Amino acid sequence: MTAFRIGQGFDVHRFAAPEEGRPLMLMGCAIPHDRGLAGHSDADVMLHALMDALLGAAGLGDIGLHFPDTEPAYKGADSAHLLEQVMGDLAERGWRVVNADVCLVGERPKIGPHRQQMRDRVAPLLGIPADLLNVKATTTELLGFTGRGEGLAAQAVVLLQRT
Image 1: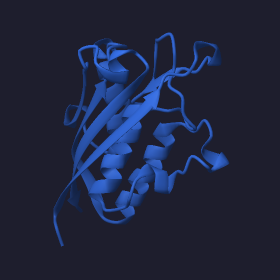
Image 2 (image 1 turned 120 degrees about the vertical axis):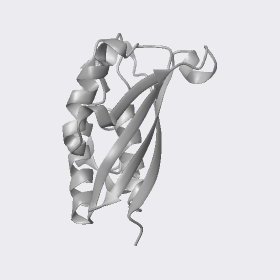
Image 3 (image 1 turned 180 degrees about the vertical axis):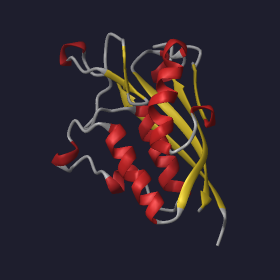
């Protein structure tokens, strides 16, 4: 049995129309912005990428398998609560998070002012100290859908250890 496993996750969401009034949720935090992301749940692109990385490392598929967008129970769901469910599944199977790295891809919002809040919100859900959860962002230099401000993407990498 492998003692360590690495998982990688990726997610994309388009911005919702301003009149929809959706909040922008990133890493379980409401971030001030003129538009939120469109999606069946709260569309937290960073937590979705993180959950995919966690599930992938444990060999448990992806969030679409666990939380399908065809299921009414997940409409408007808080992704932090979904992450808690994923962590419960991992713990039942004998996995714990060693560290995680999550990267937002987009021109704005800037996450620097919110980075510590994001780490403080999500690290306890992962069962790790905040300094073992890295949160960062990058732009695409105005290229592609993120460069045009049509949406955001996120990537995540995690290391799991067998308990």
